[in-house]
Structures are given as structure tokens and as C-alpha cells.
Image 1 (cartoon, rainbow, N blue to C red):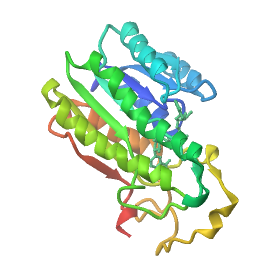
Image 2: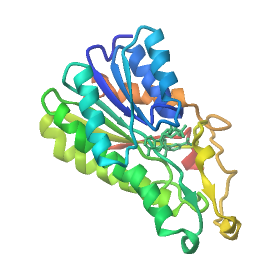
Image 3: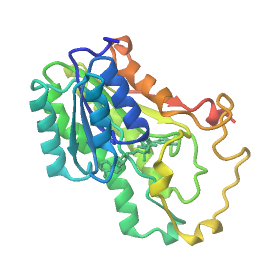
Image 4: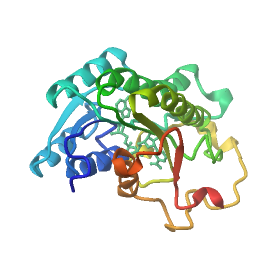
Length: 260
Ligand code: NAD
């Protein structure tokens, strides 16, 4: 495809799951992609995969919660691909530690908020200087959790971070409209990725009982979790000029999971 030809994208959490699928999809539609992830992620492989398909990709090993590293990452991606960034997918995120509020340590709370919410802020802060001139599209990965669904056990920090990301996206949409930069949040339901692998749960978690009236993770449409490619297709659409009048909103992509 050529939907994104001539565009440069900055994608965080590109080494796995939704970010990986989005990076491959955007590259296959002509974008040059800056891939941001931690060294212990699998992002080098994504970079190689895109290059082997003839696409343009640059992996920059970066913790999204580190301001200096994020500033350098944005500069590196812009420098590599012609000076501008047109598309930003602020997607890196962690479940973090799941615990009842009284057992959640302040450090665990900070870690989740720093990666998910502050990481999104830093992605915009350091990309905007490279986006103002030509305009573009910013997509922030939030979640149904914290917005339409609150039954994730022990997810007080995660849900708060995900709600914050939607508010942040809306403030950014208003602020950046003058530069013709659109900003939207996407809110996936359960998606089949590796995010559960790095989740810490305290033993006290089984003390929480939040009533749920449907099986955890079920989706009427999918009969199970959705797939990263389905979210990547939404990211592709929001990145493209086909979404030219969509800004300041949040889009649920959950197979109607939250209607149950
Ligand atoms: P994933 O774990 O498969 O991928 C996340 C990637 O982010 C990993 O490669 C990881 O290394 C990277 N990452 C984590 N911390 C980072 C940091 N500090 N700096 C840089 N990179 C970091 O998970 P995923 O499911 O693809 O998650 C992507 C986004 O989707 C997250 O924001 C998550 O909250 C959101 N989300 C996921 C689901 C789901 O069910 N999988 C549902 C709703 C929202």
C-alpha cells in the first residue's frame, strides 16, 4: 500500500504486540518508522523484518519514561528520515504491579504511571517540534480499562494511567489543532499480546472481589481476545488522510466487550 508514503512515524513499544503490528503495517504502507522500545524487548527483530521487506526502519533503544532518552530518540528518528515526524503512535505500556490499593507500593504506582502516562506525555513533548511544520496524526494507546471497564483486578494504577491518557489526548487535540496535528486515543479491549508476561501480582490480589457479570476477557464479536493486527488496522486508518476530520476523540476497539 501507499497510504503513508512519504511519512515518518515514531512508534513506542514497537517491539511487541500492538506496537509491533502497527510498525509492520505502517511500514508496509510506505512510512519510514522509528521504533522505540527497551533493549530487552524484541525490537531489533522488528527492525530487521521491516528492512528485509524493503521498508525503512530505525530502532532506538529507549525507556519512554526517561526524558533525556526520549528527546534523543525523537531527534535521531527525525534526523534519520529527513527532518520531520508526521505520525506518532504513543503505545508503550505495562500492566505493572497489580495489587489492592492498600498493598500497592508508591514505587509500583509511580512505575505504572511513569511508563504509561508520563511516557505518552514525553512522546508528544519531544515529537511535536518535528511535527509542527507539516502537521500529522498522533495516536495514544489507552484501554477500555479506566474508561469503560473497571473490573480489572488490582488495576488501580493501570486504570488511572489509561484514563489519564484519554484526557491528555483531548487536551493535546485542542492545543495542536492549530498545527493541523490530529490527536486521538484508542481503547482496545483484551488483545492477544505479551503484556501479561511482565505483570506482577501481589498474593493479596485474591482478596479483591469486584463483581463481574460476564467471563473475563470475553468479546461478543471475537469469542476471545482480539488480535494486534486488528488494532494496527485502526492505527493505519487514523494515521491516514482518510481520518482527516477525526481528532480529540477516543475510539473503542473491543469487539463489543464493554457492551456486555
Ligand atoms: P506488549 O507487552 O506485547 O508490548 C508492549 C511493548 O512496550 C513491549 O515491547 C515492551 O518492551 C514495551 N515497553 C514497556 N515498557 C517500556 C518502556 N518503559 N519504554 C519503552 N518501551 C517499553 O503489550 P501490548 O498489549 O502490545 O501493549 C501495547 C499497549 O496496548 C499498552 O499501552 C497497553 O496498555 C495497551 N493495551 C493492551 C491491551 C491488551 O489486552 N493487550 C488492552 C488494552 C490496552
